[in-house]
Length: 299
Image (cartoon, rainbow, N blue to C red):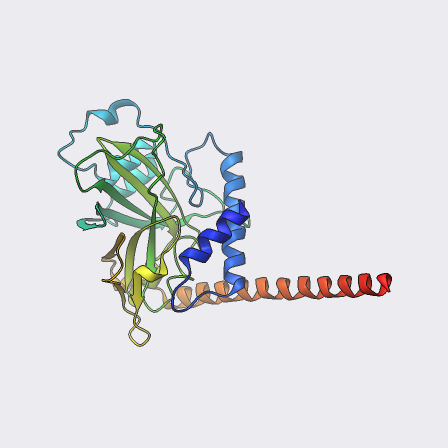
């Protein structure tokens, strides 16, 4: 699996500026640990980081007509998540219903809600800490030609994956995206439409920086699909990108920003990356020492 992930990361992060080895190592570690969590919790519905933890649609959800999208609350109901469904009915939820079409796909941002203890399914991060303060974004993905998206049980399911992620203005997207923000997703298909709930750490604390939702083809953030202005921090689509690179503005009230919490979050991320680097340096030292011993022994 690690070799596959190395190859994916090398292709996805091949842009003008590449992340350092510490970030790659951190992301790989989180993905591998998430995969282990998925195997251990395969009977549960809670999200795990970017494993296809999708379920078939059961029960009364099938009665909804094909001519309308499910609401975010209805999508949550499909996972029997009464808490999240109620949150999407609440006053803090934002219904957006904006559609963009690229690369033969139609992507609709249905809505977002953020807060503490919203979901019936509260998970833990890779360090074992409870993740109770989260943002939940609901999207719908369709084939632009009207053909249905493959069901989870179909062999074709997953052959054209998508990476859905909040992005933060002024922060490098390759470092601050749904993976490094502790994200994951669940999804299912109804009436040929692929509904996905993407969750990550609460992004409202960054509301004063400008928030986005990106949807690109592939299993990881595609750096070449977007640009970030180094002066203003504004993120835009790369108009020359030939695949899917939808980009939505998340209309979150700037008054919900928490600059102190945002600064602490960034500092924590940087400290973690530095810690990864120190571990690598120590590991390198050990390898060098072991090699020198072997050389002396051979002589």
